[in-house]
Length: 135
View 1 (tube, rainbow, N blue to C red):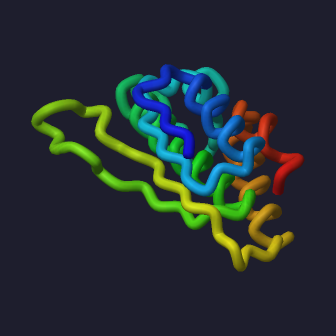
View 2 (view 1 turned 45 degrees about the vertical axis):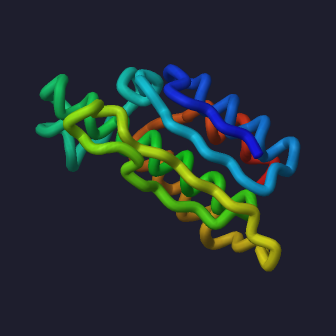
């Protein structure tokens, strides 16, 4: 098992990567600040929303955690994103929970779907760079 709590920015990606690399049965990750995609993200259809800093920041954070969860699925984990503590205590209350899927079979269409999302938002996140060889 590997646990990461409030690992800032791409430190969460490295914690997830080490969990996958070590073939951990369980990976629990509570991301903190996610800045990487904020600098990269571009999308013509969402350009209006992305022009507002606070909305771009929140969307980038949600997209980052979505990509982390999906990357774990592509690596053979049953993945869920849960709220682990009430919002009144901290706004950083998302936990990515991944449990090794013993019946996993690789699905090329899911990999293509993941990569299309990266292309559509013009992003190249660390989680992809670290885990693409495990897909």
